[in-house]
Image 1 (cartoon, helix red, strand yellow):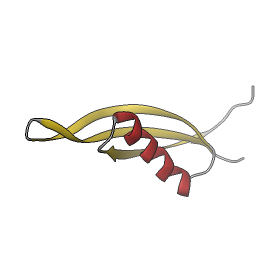
Image 2 (cartoon, helix red, strand yellow):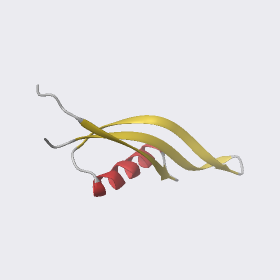
Image 3 (tube, one colour):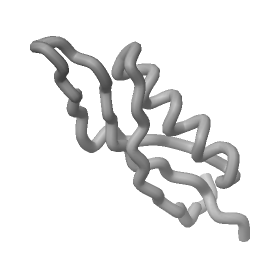
Image 4 (cartoon, helix red, strand yellow):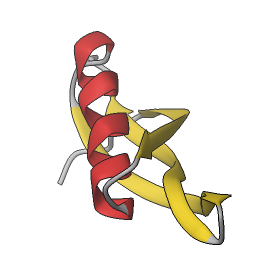
Length: 69
């Protein structure tokens, strides 16, 4: 296995549907500007509440991509 160097960015994805959808939204946005996405780490999960119910999920992720040699 060859050694890799990674770039790591941090994004906050949001969704009114689910935590998973919030993560997918962050990854989809990252994929529009970043190349070679390889992994992600969920750093923080929170929700916006309205009238005692979850109205919106926010998930902070760190996404790693390999840098080209």
